[in-house]
Structures are given as C-alpha cells and as structure tokens.
Image 1 (cartoon, rainbow, N blue to C red):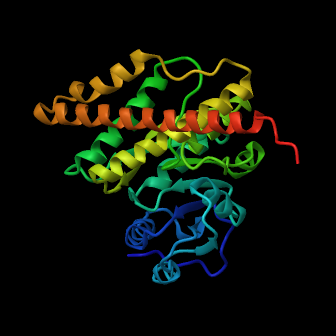
Image 2 (tube, one colour):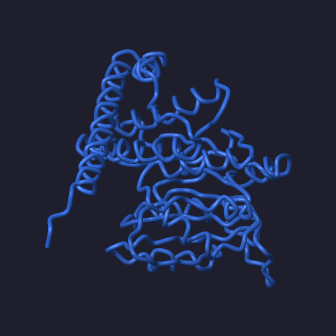
Length: 311
C-alpha cells in the first residue's frame, strides 16, 4: 500500500529524473514502479522531462499525483541529454537519480542508493541494469554489450564509463561538471562520465541498486540504434581527445573481438551463438555510424576550406 504524503513535505533526498519521448505506456510502468518503492514518499520527488513528445504525457503523470511528488517539465525535442538537464533545472533533491522511462526500478532501488551515499556521499553511483525482456534477442544482445563494457572498464586502470539508464550523483556536483552535453544525442552519458572523472570526482558501481530495462527492439530498430550509437561514439571520442590533448583513437581490435565472444562465455548454447552474431551485427552498425560521422565531418571541413567565389 502506498505510504501517505507527510503534511509538511521535507526537502527531498532524491530527485528522480525521467527523460521521455513518446513512451506513455512504458512511462506508466516506470511510474508504477516508483510509486511502489519502499523509500519514504516525502524523501524523493519525481520529475518527468518530456522531450517534445507528440502524445500527451500529463494524463499519465496525473494518475500518480496522490502517490508521488511529481512534476512534468515539457520542452522542445533536444535529445536525452537536454531532457535530463531540463529536469535537473527543476530538481530540489540533494541527490539526482536518473532512470529511463522504459525501466522499472526494484522496490529497494532508492534504499540501496541511499546506503551507498551514506558511505560515499560525493561519488557518482551506477546501479545494476537487468534486461527485462529475455525473450527478445535484440534487447538481450544490447544489454550484453552494456554489461561487457562495465566489466571491461572495471578490470582496467583509468576511466570508467556508465550508462545514464541508472545513475545517481550529488546535485551540486552535477551542476559543477556542467550537466550533459546537449550537442550529443547518444554517448552523452559516457562523455559526462569522462568529464566527471577528469574533474577529480569518484565513481562506484552498485549492482544491488537495480532497474529492469524493457526496451523492445526489432531487427530494424536494433540496427538503427547501434548506427546512432556509432555517430555519438565518434563525436564523444573526438571531444575527449580535444579535452585531454591526447591522440584520437577508437578501441583496439581486441576489445571488439572479446565483445563478440562475450555471449559465448555465459553458457547459453545455441542462443549464445545467436547473441554473439547479433553483437557482431551491432558492432558493424556502430562502425557504419562512425564512418558516416567521419564522412560528414570531412565533407563539412572541405566545404568550409574551399575558396569562395568572387561576387
């Protein structure tokens, strides 16, 4: 049963920010999950940041007014990074907790994050992400890529990169770092992680703070998504090289070889081979996006350097 609102609401500990775009049905399930959290209702607020949806989001949010402290922010479409920034602009909480609108939090999600912040109050914390659609091989392959990247960087010295599907961090630090880069439509979370760490701030992986990701994909949307990831990946890597003064480069070939093999290490038999094939397809689509971005930038550079005609 939902906990009653306090008569005098306290400043929330958490501001839960949900960027959304034309996903009223998944948003409803996300809000239902938030309304079912064990965490005290007066200790968190929910901000739905509507990124220019073509369908009305307010009626969905209105169903939860008596169960959640909820605000809807509507703005022109600017991408997920811009949507999160607009949500944060209205946030009052000490900590920001980002979750995507196609995710459902575990009942103890905020409790686990609060426990982590009690020990490491200044860290960026990345919670666990579980594929909620095990019957969809495209969704499962995408989640395997995310899991591999988390594990890969956890084993290495240097920077770590997490997905904004489930991260939480101090609100003051978020604003100090400058929020998400709104020029990036994908990889804006990896870019933020890089700027966070190079600002001297720490990160922690907290797999016990789980959300369940229910992103339905088809073959076509799977390829489009990873192509888009490739474009964002190239732009993020280029910006990272400029920021640090290092030479621009992508990952070494061994990274991609281990990534494609990763599904085979999880003991799923024939399905493991299917998932490995899909991971390879995803990387091909990503490479296509990288190439597209390189050619686009090369063409723009050639046009800008061409001599202008005499008028």
